[in-house]
Length: 208
Image: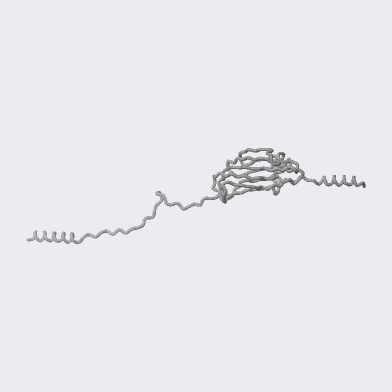
């Protein structure tokens, strides 16, 4: 077998094993303002992050796949930019809890540098029985709408639940009274004796 023909066969066989892999990414430069460990419901938050797309196949991102950004913040507003080699290639300005980015906008030759930059603002949701909420969540969907395994990246926050204090009794609530013993003042003996003496004196005068 000629060497050139053998090389051609090896090339064709190896080409058959090239499989488009899902892109990998990791959130970096994440900021949440105001910063803190816990947040009361209703407070406004601003968050930003960068999402570099690291190719795992022949392109930076599979065209038929979708990048999904979501948040639990109420009244969420997004400003998302797709950067290619440091230049702005696409802009998304959306309102709502979820933003879908078509893979076509992220698919470039592996020699290109692709990054998604995210700016987000919204209000901390009520607890609804849960102590944590998602500030920013990123997942990748395949062409069948299924979540790609290992693609989830999440930035979480904790909701501060106010401590319930024991309320003081209101005017409508009975307040325990301190019992007091009333000491009745006794009747002075002088008037009594004087009255008896007068009665005795008049009776005696009458009998004389």
